[in-house]
Image (cartoon, rainbow over all chains, first blue to last red; front, side, top):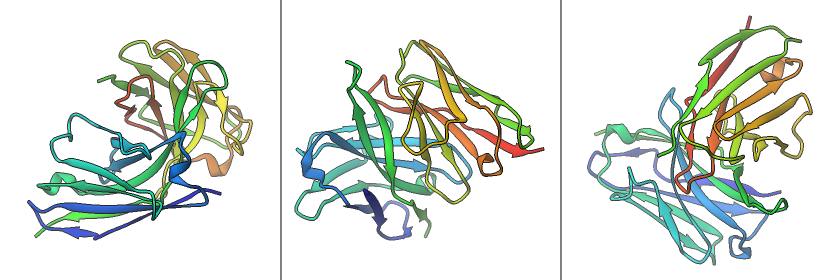
Length: 126
Length: 107
């Protein structure tokens, strides 16, 4: 059973960099076939996809956050990480890591987030 | 960006009711549509992928349909554990986007 676990500071000061790590267990990031995503949810609001990384290191970011986001992977630790720079109060949210799985059995490849971490609340405040 | 619009935003229903939630995409997304259930304080849970495929372990009372721009999630007979918020999400575009959510409450 694949499990994901977010870790990192729960409080970040404005203008600083938010840093979170997602540790994957029950499966290897290096095995390929999956993208590894970060998703956030502002308090009481909907879900916003931040970006993903493949085990090879290739990334894709939400254009609305691209200038501030870096996602990296450490296959030796079976972890991937999120850095969000120059944070403001608007970045206060629950941050989730998730596995983006591809189902290609029908000819086309359909992507979905099939495993999620439990989420971690990050508050931006001085 | 592909915009996803769910209706209704909230819904009151009783145990045993049949419930349908709608999701509309701002452009055609073929069948690249997923549905998630989220309970308070928990991560979303995948219910349906590729518009109509039931995720392993999800009860058969959940079903999905649609293609192109219009999609539905149906719960055939509501159970107490189904009261939650439901989100649709498109994976047609690399920039994945979610609907705003539909909160299903007990009547």
